[in-house]
Length: 171
Image (tube, rainbow, N blue to C red; front, side):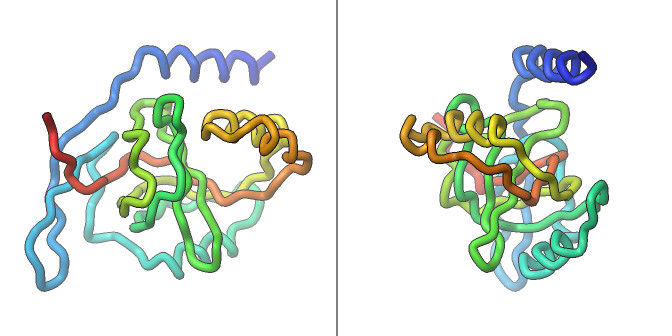
């Protein structure tokens, strides 16, 4: 019953929340400042760690461990229903599934292939077949692809406080 209540609260929060956006600048070493859109909380560009280190940190996590990290990564996939999760690439064909703190913000559904900066709590978790099928449905996978999902998977995950994406042209 407790899990049902948590899911219900998350769903209600999702319906009531809107995407928080602001603009920030990150100064790349020796180059011009780039404008970034902020989704969620602002992230400090001073604490960005290397992708190889991110993968190493994930590998060192034990069950129920978590660590706060900020890193840059390329977006592999975004929820096509409303932008409520994304997967980002790490080295060696590894991915991290990113959800957003308290369902308090979402990202644009067309962020795939873009570089983002993410700050949040990293952990690993075994994801059930039912949940994997739900995510595949959100990603727009075919019924045939969804039917092939039949084993739980250990995944690297992150609950983001904020995401920075390169500034987009606004109408």
